[in-house]
Each structure stands twice: as structure tokens, then as C-alpha cells.
Length: 250
Image (tube, rainbow, N blue to C red; front, top):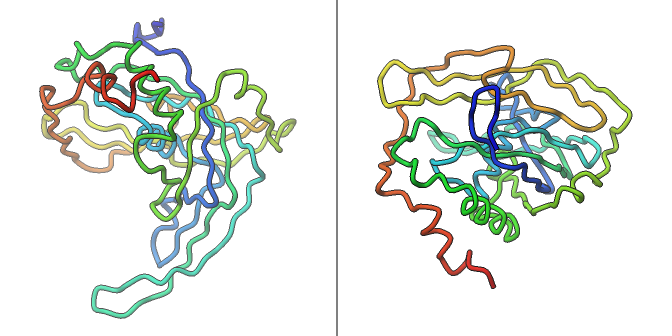
């Protein structure tokens, strides 16, 4: 499938369910002073990280299309003992979301900055690996915003996703402007900045639809960022991954 706006390849949509006892999608404005407070909804960046934990290669870029809220939004504050540099402990207060569950719709595109990986742009094989990874609960541990919030992921079919009900159907809720995502430098040249994107968050009929990172309302250059040096010849191709025992058809 080709995106006519940019003539950019887009995969077919994928669907999954993400859930867990707790989540902490930290509002960056609350990080100081020994407290962290969660956003009411997961961010584009957090969901992209969760999907990447299920399966990722530098050949791909995940785009989150929308998230459906499946459980009522509830928060819970916990006191956390944090070790100090000079010994001793201090009590910090973190506010988490509790009993979270989301349906997620997403797709992948090719990372056009990695021309050295153009031979690995095999939609069918990457799709097979991604679907099998989702069916197995991901390739790596799933964390809902932070490491202490263990999560779970499972594959959904389109009809299963569309049948999911939200407690916020028939409502339109505005959560203001919130962090959306990061834009990472596309090359190893110095001077390119890591950019933080912010956008308006509206939950309509239980669904938060995401704009693409480049289409968000606010872009803020954070700092120079050195991208990791991942040589193309050191990266396992989709064909090599697909032939591993865990991905073979049973």
C-alpha cells in the first residue's frame, strides 16, 4: 500500500490489545520535586515503544493510528522509597493509572533514512514476524510507560478490535495539549536535534486518534542527539528472523 500524500509505503493496519495492572505515562511537567504524575491516556511515543518491544527492526518505523480506551480511567498514588546518592532513602510519590486496557490500531512504514537496508524491505516477511510476535505476547518484556509497570500484549483481528467497547462511547473529552512523540535525527551528521512533539488530546467515543509526528501542533528542539551506529550488515534480516524456530509455522 502506498500513501498518496507522500508516495510513502504503508503496511496494512494491525490491531492489538495492551493491558496491565498499572501504567505510568509520565507528564514531563511533573518529573521534578520527587513526584511523577501520569497522563490520563497513553502517548503516541509510549505506544510506539510497546509495539517495538513486540517486534522491531531499523528497517521499520511504526505509526500509531489510534488507541481505544477499554476500561474507566482511574488513578492511584503510591509512595515509593528511592535510594539517595549519599546513602539513605527518600519517599517519592508517583500517581499511576490502574487496571488499564487499550485497543491499538497501527501500521509500519519503511525507514527511508536506512538506504543500506532496502533489501530488507519485505512487507510479507515483516508482517508474518510481527503477527507471530503479537500472538506470542511480544519478543521482549512489555512495560506500560515505566519498568515497574509490567504489561501484556496480544494480537487482535480487525473484527475483534472493532467489536471492543469503550466506557466513553458517546462522549467527547478534551485533555488539553500533551507530549506526543520524539522525532529522532535521520542521519549521523552533527547539528541535528532531537525534537519533542506536542499535540491536542481529544477522546471521542472512547478513541484517541493520533496525528503523525510531523503534523503535530508544537515542535520543540531538545538537544543534539547522536543516533546509534547500527551497521546494516550487522542487522538480522526479516528472512533470517523468519527462519528461526520460534517463527516457523507449526
